[in-house]
Image (tube, rainbow over all chains, first blue to last red; front, side, top):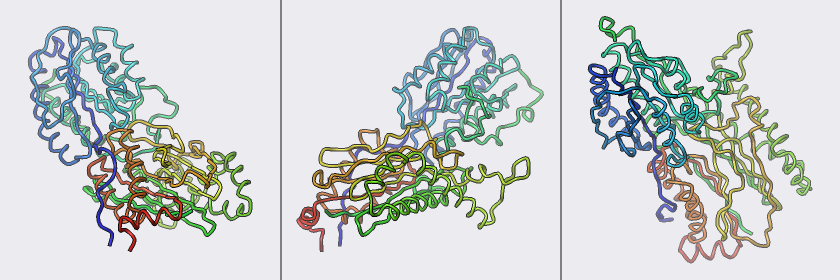
Length: 245
Length: 288
């Protein structure tokens, strides 16, 4: 009878899944808005940890990038979700979204990304209009291989946010989530955080699956709807309509 | 020369957790003249592809059927077959495989009385049907004088001998979870193929390994995957193909569990000098 032999081969590893919170910390976010963001993202962590435990074959790595006057990595390098802790953000300054895109792009090149990673998830939260020249750096981001493949979600906070810019980032109007009051913001942040669990257990799919509009070869076009549960996006109108930013 | 062909398909660890069946398929045919036809396929498994297990099964059957027909037609003139495959491998052969896969998918869909999506004109929406069966396909035809490699979508064809590892084909590497698919209209245009002569007077032993992407994706990086292919070859040389075949299923389960969690299929053809295959394994006590 053949006896069991030790498995041959090299080092095994789960696939990395990079999740980015990109948070507008400009002056207009001061007070209730940034407070709600801090509270809501903090509250998503236990569920993200549980979701990661349900899929040990994906290594969920989280980072936070804040932008106001300039942009800064709050987390200098990716952190395992089990070790991730939210540091409350303050608000003040202008809205250098372009700088944020530039710093994000630098992290989506290969390296430091690897080609065996799962599609990264980027959640951008903003309440205003960019004050720097964002187009060039957004274009660069969206032309990167991992920039194109990333699941890109935007949360538009309040009625002064520039949804056109956010749509340029997401490539899909449906993925610009409206949050005009604290309750809606919490709901949208919670929904966005579930993207990690959906991306982490993906099946393969045909290249250029035709949900992307025919003839649309722009880099902003996204296949994110194929991964996310688009039917489950919270209805912003159904949440706390009396208190509106 | 002695040859042994063996393989396994395992349900991925992440699929087990959600009770989704293995979407991979494989098939091999061995002929008396020593020719081998072997194929693996990886069904996409997404919600948009509920019948991709059926799609991958159809894929390996179609490849074997199409190549079997060539084997029959050119049995007396393998040189001519070599020339033909070299010239038409990624055109006429690819078109034949593509067309037959789609024909069989429509037949299965009808026979199973599954919902038929319609176009705006009320006609059968064939692309929407194909999509539900989406699969990759990777195959080899190994004759006494040449090896023909065929690939549509992700997966690997690895050739290993005492000099190390070589990839028979370089398929387009697509980031993330996308892949080229039989389900696409004009899928044949995405096929890559190659023909390599066999020189049976030297180079033994050697191994050809087909693997679905769940295998390579379970390793830390490309170097670790390549090391793995070489390790499997060394294992066969040391313990014999039969010993590796017996252990393969458990190894692949372990690979998926500690790696990417996807389904994994590995299909191996090992060729050696007659005397050496048995003497090494016998010396290790593997032959009863």
